Length: 468
Ligand code: FAD
Image 1: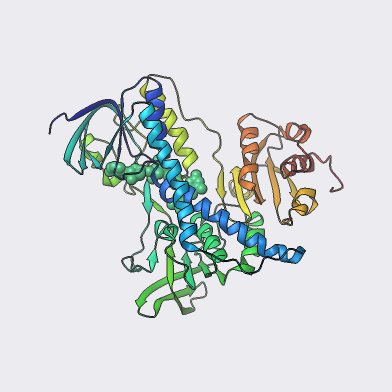
Image 2: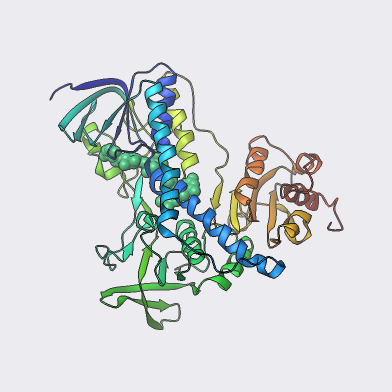
């Protein structure tokens, strides 16, 4: 099957990194082939990640807000959840986006090859397609093979009641009692969904806080709200065994003081992190180095140790986020087309689309303390924001971190409704070297949540003394 197909640029994997790279390379005049093992383009993010989770989180927010409006004179009664219809809507959102990608590929004459690909030489990938194996040769290649959920040795992963994020997003029912093993972003987002749909959800986390990585003061309003809604949030607790029995999954917990107890659940979601797919593509046959953990190391132009092979997205390292993959994809594609481009983002924002949302970018306060970075801060509690009070959601906090030498903003953390949208302004401010006066003197529309960024900057400057 020698030389079945050839392209100037071959992209392995069609997630946000891969499709962005393929489309950009094609737009720059390259002849491109995109290899994907699944029939639908879009990778984890569109099919079983960012997008379906956000559709379900939207449903969850509608339910919980309707619930809480009862205190303000608007009652709806118990929500009636039609799981099949909800799943159908979620699937239709995914289909609209992935179908759109196929159209965009065709428009650009990007050829797609469906099947599992692995390197068979420095300029060739063998693809196991439905019609046998095909060899795709290339001048340059961009690896965008992504990542997959981590499995735990003591968990019976083959039991259908044990799921990963993909299984949880399938929404094949609403369990009565659910355990979310891992209180990171993905785990806590899914806990939010199943709680709103009616499950009694317990979240267990090894660390001393949920959403590790974000400042504790910012997490607090989320934790407080969810403690009221969830069955339990168990911090500093280890799961040591999960036993599958007929009447449920019996889980053994061990808390910090060494005490252990067991509880029974109908479903266990394992959300303890993701592992890169670097070891699954025979990278050694192309001479591409892969670390013990499965990551592929790249330089600032996304080039691997083999100069004509690039890598992007989850497979090159943390943070494993779609917007990072997209930017790396553009860089790699432009470099294949001979442009002098490098990945030079100063910051990459992180967002948990929980309710309230939690978002942070750049230097966090805890990181500044830990690393001995001198900083100043401006903190604006949303209880003083007219808009958040009108939204009946005033638990938020906007915190800006400044360099005290020149008053430039170097970080931010926001908790509250729409925090994920609000953080983008601060990311731009950091990229542009804006200072407290820039943020404080820019007129923000009133009444909006965006004013909290404005006010936090003024708090740092000391120009606000009375909260409004
Ligand atoms: P992936 O999206 O992982 O795509 C890799 C593709 O390569 C896959 O389609 C795979 O099938 C294919 N592939 C791999 N190996 C082969 C092979 N050998 N042959 C052929 N094809 C192959 N990120 C955010 O920024 N925001 C969010 O809100 C968010 N929510 C998430 C929610 C969940 C539940 C999960 C699991 C993840 C979420 N993420 C989110 C993370 C995000 O999905 C990833 O960072 C992103 O998809 C990475 O893109 P990628 O292009 O590197 O790889």
